[in-house]
Length: 176
View 1 (cartoon, rainbow, N blue to C red):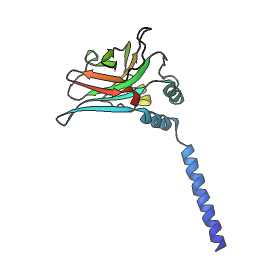
View 2: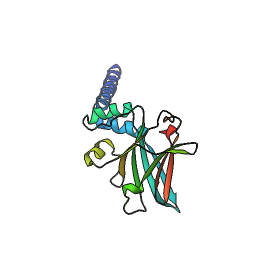
View 3: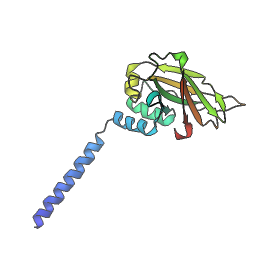
View 4: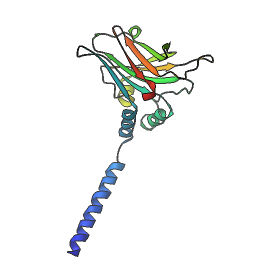
């Protein structure tokens, strides 16, 4: 009976060590994907049961940049501490082709809206696949930056609005 206890203890320790080894073998891209999924906010607008507009919003900050450095050091976002920055993936399911001039982004507080100072569409498929894989091939991906001035700093803005012709959605930035 004593020998059976030793065998059970050996097998149990072998299983525990094996599980720890497999956990240690996680790739940096798996860790990055888990990090992004934990911070990603997804909003959708439906009309009569049809999906009209979808947006996925990822805030840009130093923690995102440091996680991106582990996966793809040459393709990381630039972070500006004085701006509110987001990666926004947008898809309008009812518009067959969505032009850049049809997509609008706003940051708002108490009814006051702030337009972005910088909007860049990310079109490089390898960057999207590596860093923003949450945006399927149906989504358009943008890096959007909002900035205030001395009289009106980017503080207290708590809503991010994405609008296309015929539809719009809002996300509380405190949730992001």
